Amino acid sequence: MSLRRPRAPLLDTALVAASLLDVWVKVHIDEPLRLSWALVAAFALFLRRRRPLLTFLLTLPAVLVSDAVFAALAALYTLASFTRHRTLLAVCVTAFTICDMTSWPSLSYDFTNTATVITLGYTAATAAAPVFLGQLVQARRDLSRQLAEISEARDHKRLLTAQSVLAKERAQLAREMHDVVSHQVSLIAVRAGALQVGTRDAEAKEAAATIRRLSVQTLDELRHMVSVLRASGGRPTELTPQPSLADLERLVDNSGIETELQTDVPEDLPPTVQRAIYRTVQEALTNARKHAPGTTARVHIRHHDGAVRATVTNTAPTRPPLPLPSAHHGLVGLRQRAALLGGTVTAGPTADGGYELRLELPAGERT
Image 1 (cartoon, rainbow, N blue to C red):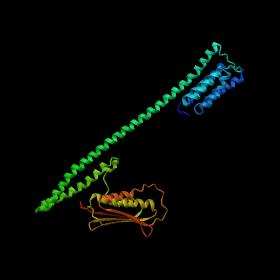
Image 2: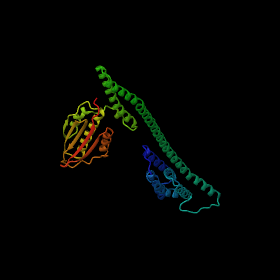
Image 3: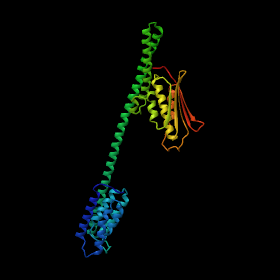
Image 4: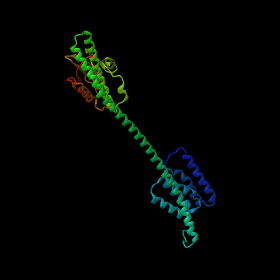
């Protein structure tokens, strides 16, 4: 394990310099063996972050043959701050203690001597101190990471709570609009229809017709708003102005496909029907551009016998299709939208290798 910090190289250089100072003070230049191992131990500290155990093993010979132990203590601290193996740390402390107590080349110990026992305890405590310090630093690092995770989890929980409250408010508002507002507007439409049929006054009949027409339009828009509010995960863009038949020409011009547009439907169709036609044409042209490169398309929309029929036909592709990502939810969404409006959507290949998408909807009452 390695720990990358902006000041890490500077700290490593400082430790190496301190180790070299320890070598200069405690090792004589006329002792080449001790001097060599002491220098190896000092410069091995540059590896302490990438290979802490190897660094400690490279410093042990210097402890065995000389009194320059600073590098070994620094390596032992680094190893303790990175590893979680307590048994390994105990073995390293024991190895340091044995090497420090040994007067090379003599390997004899007299544990009956009180001074030897005192030296053993002092040496073991000296080796244990950097281990305890390294473990403390590791625990502090783990605690900081856990606190950061707890803080992140708390922020996420706060966000989920806010979203839940918002969704509940949206659902309550949708319920109120559906149960209260739509009921009242429906009553207005019914009363206006009755007045339109029952009165003989031309002005009253025209006023009643206007009230009924506006009430029906309001109900359509209200139904759309209720569906938006109930979609708690909906995006803010759902509240932006929705497309209509007037936007079809711009859609065809920007489709990137050579497209012929033919339409003979009135412009006062209900907004929900206009949106369904627009989305159907949009999905068909998008699919043609993705799955049939080089194709040409024809969009034909007509109004007949109280129904609106939109047909989008594209020719066979002239180039291989592009490997673009697709969730394959477009046609499913179109069928669901058409079903909600009492219509149908059918699609399938044509005899010449092209594709055709057909939408049929009841025209409803014009606005």
